[in-house]
Length: 578
Image (cartoon, rainbow, N blue to C red):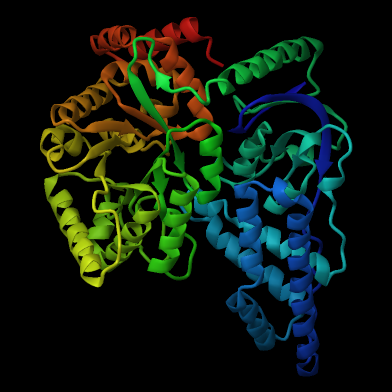
């Protein structure tokens, strides 16, 4: 029996038989061509691209109305790549300069693009390499007259094990026969992860070598709740996981019954539960899990991995699409948050010694004012299509907020003068991610309509820990007394001025922390949409008096270890958390 640990990308437990799916890039021939052969090579490329586009259109046609929003969007994005004249022209120009066959030119160009993306600090950007590779494989297969394995033809239940499942393969596969996915590559924001959650297929990604370890036909357990994969389990392990699987399935059924119910405590306190999204493809999952809206839409996905800054029109269309899809539910869009570990090709600080403490988020927007103004124009124009809320990231004090609001008002007046319609009553809020902001929220609360606590950075800055540094990561403690006291200060300051407080960091989606946050007075929890039903179950099971008592006890404790132990024991005994 072998146990592997990876990334818990999609929840659930599956027990089944391995189907090993190999779709490696074939060996690419390299040979010189003459000037006389150039036209024939150009035609070969055009024909291969056209046939690759027909493949994708066939998937769309065969699946028809069964295609969900995220699936359709991914396939549409692949068609756009195939039809991008600048990409195809660059391949042809390179071929003409180097006089090498088009397969070699395509493979080398794509490899260079993927290597560039793979070194990006932003996880979302790194994981877009799968889309580039997907499109390139389709073209290469046609250039080399090579057939591709068909996951749509699966006719028995299997656990799919592969190195890297291409997004279009995930859409086309026979989902009824795929019990789970275990994959070498990928992370939580990869398209495979997004689609697996959409299909409600358990998935563990980032296993590195599982596809090279197995040959197919092995018995396997995939635990998408904890990121564990067990190969050739013994009888006792099989029995234990069969029991856990049954419990999980019953648990899921119970949770889904809560979808249409409000997140209301036993004594009538109504709490808002919203979803966080990185890309528009995730909107459908937000609705499927009973969210009250979107509490954090990270708009920077439009700015990452592109050769040019997105235009006002491109941004407007992206925001409009999400607002329209949410059908009147509130959508909070965070303005551009690049810098630090999120690198934009067009907006980049040079040679920063400590980028996490450097030129990032609102600091970038206040320096690159035209970029900021363009985004604000797009947001304001989109506001007529839904219930938009705008949020500024990483405000550290009143001076930054004042300048951001001045620019916002300038853009509003500009649109009024031009007769461009927008919602005059858009709520504007800020993220509280910096201790200096938390400690001055009594001042900041007088100038905004809401707060949203970004615990990922607030914890990092409060305890002076780089959470990406494994040597000090153990000090990254959400239940540190200093962190909890700052959260309490923020909530109390906001309520004193009559404004609401949300939380959109990872802590908001942690069921273990939910009752403490409720007791501290948090108004809104925003998280990955898959976590909403569990947090809703907890909120509906307790009274505010119980939550306040637990939070009060915790605030008297002296160490994060003591708090963590107390809260985990209480929550496990009370709610039997998975």
